[in-house]
Image 1: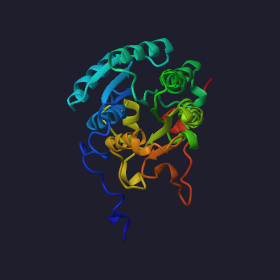
Image 2: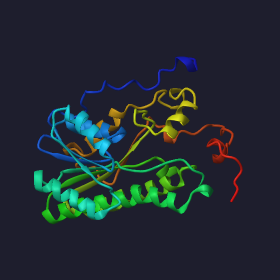
Image 3: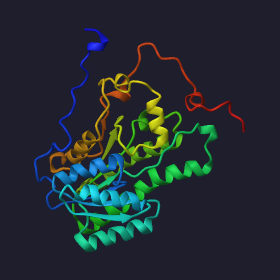
Image 4: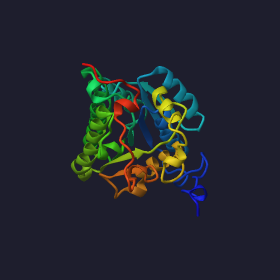
Length: 295
């Protein structure tokens, strides 16, 4: 069989199909940070299709309006809250509002994050803080507040944190994000042990390449310049955002109650790929179109 005839992994069922039994999340409330766009919105949509009420938190009012319109069309209750997860007081206020109106959410999906490519030597302290504060500190603040409330109430809950494969491998060009995501992975593993005796499960979820309409301009430009994206994946195709949503609904569900402290990678084995003979090394500065470093 020639390379051009290789089948790759089959395509998934179409959007709108469900990976779990209908009504799996009837009576449940799911809080998704950064759930107004991109993969966060795709995750939220799959919970909604299974009966969940949604709480969407985002810094951007425009994203909240979009989420309310598009996710509300799936039939469940959707409430939106402007929230910067770097602010523990605002997180507490949002959870107060949600709890007063409909009860404490049963599931938390930590999807909000920040990222942009930059060589480490060009990275300012402000750039480092911005990404680490949102991706790692914000994830901890939200998880801590959510967990404390369930611990105090004596109620079970499920937490899913969206990570990245460079938490294992390192991320040249993304030192700030890679370090933060490594912290998120460790946080998942730590809290799963600390909180398991009280009925709280904590898991991670890592997406592969899943193009969507909300990708940032720099990422979109990089993909467009990379040629055939499918042929660069062991699956010979990229992922679909709803595939990540299906994985999230399983990890948080009653059918995964003995799974905790695990990080599930949904990328068609791409991060495990190794060439028999390594490809030529291209420095990160050159990949990002930057000239020689000048202090």
